[in-house]
Image: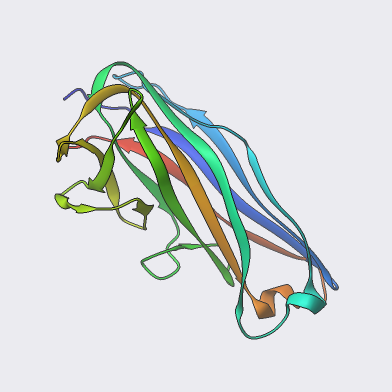
Length: 189
């Protein structure tokens, strides 16, 4: 398999909080670096906006679910290649990504397609373990018929689920919450 150059789509989470009103958003930015395979990775929109949060309505000791947001992930390669990817971000607990000190988010790849055909995703080192969730330290590979598949275009919907602690929403002064990481295409072997 040809060596893939690292392609990066950055994901940064930003939330601003001021007495009683909170604005929360996750912004997606992408950058492409040179690679042997010349694959390109992109996301459909640069910003996922969670809108304003009213601290008085949301405060408490429980985590507050900010909702589901979806962006489209696309990978285009000039030649057929095995597509494997991971999301590099700060781990909150080994299963989800940190969003500041008091929040976290999950990423799930839904409706994956390779060259327009439905495919499965699995752990790169254990093809028997199917997964659509991108967890910290995990690499997913595209499968067709139970084996790594080659193709020129890959697409999936990336579902972003974000939570903040009730204490983080109930702050009295402006607070910036940051978190993020980046998508990477990696060799599948």
